Image (cartoon, rainbow, N blue to C red):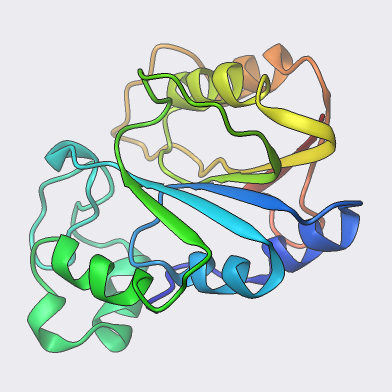
Length: 193
């Protein structure tokens, strides 16, 4: 599986859980975290948006995180087979996820606009720099957590050219649960439900 981000925040979150039945991953990309979850949870439900504007493309500059000059692009050029270094490939995602029988891959935006009966012990959300998007995700997923569950969310600093309707501080102040920055990387927060 091709992973963009470190496993350290995941391992830290895992050490805080009392149950490891269900992990929900919002923003699968090519399943790097999914493969880790599959080894540590009974079941994994993984969301990948089919929305072209939300996809991370390596070889082009369209999509929310696809502008030139981002470090993740160079990293993924090293990790992805050459044939997948242009537009995002759902074929490659399907090939990778098919190796894990306890993973259900959902091609749908988050939060889902259909009935979703599942709850989680760990939910990871790693999809945007936009604090308004963080608030939207938190507002939905906070209602799906089991007792003593955790939401691990990537909250990357906005770039100088970003123009968001709320600030990161406003988002953080709106969180109704205990939360804190992952100790080794302030691009991630843990929200305890």
